[in-house]
Length: 185
Image (tube, rainbow, N blue to C red):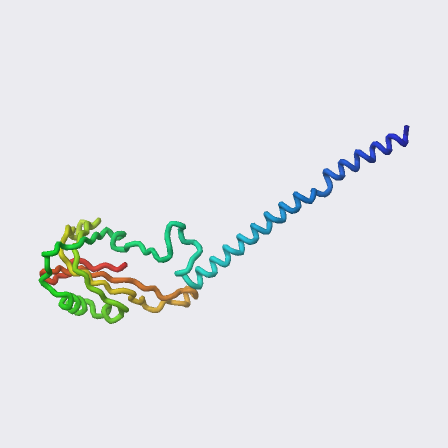
């Protein structure tokens, strides 16, 4: 009888040891896979942060609905709408006259811009400020100065600071040549 109790307790102990001691192989494999996946995601995140820091234009963090080539309209975001003028609606100023006038008004910007374009259009703008005038379908020359460099950033404050480019838009009345609105975007 004593032998029987010993053998039975050994069998019970062996079963308990199998359950409580080491996990089975499947559980180990699953936890190893999950751990590696989390480490991989963390590494990808750090690589993305590094790339974004070195090249701000490149980013893994752009929303899925935005394609890299799609650029939102900065004028629409500023509350400005443009429309095509009627076929018979001709400006009093020519494109060249409009460019010369704006270049004389903004010589520093004209000198810094990579590209200056002029477009005859109808301009609408409702300002949120009471001090600024509102415009509705006014014929204008839209002069767009593209890629104007900001002054060199202070790299002592931020070692990763880089130059930024901005665009400058001037809305010139097509009949009088009067400056209606100028905006940085």
